[in-house]
Length: 84
Image (tube, rainbow, N blue to C red):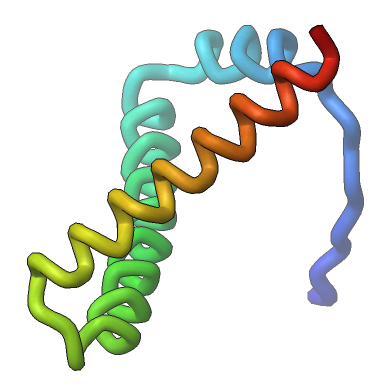
């Protein structure tokens, strides 16, 4: 039997209502499925980060991240003060 695919747009609040109406066992299955998907994506992201930073010490990585955060905050502050 062929698989038929379709897309349906459902407002998020309506989706939550539908999920709330699921029997407890089905909610557990849904949650485990969502958690597994999230966990797989998170692990893949960590693996990429480890690969890209393997030549640096943890201290160097932390310093680079801290500098990047400062830079973004400076740019955000500068752009917000332009409009005032």
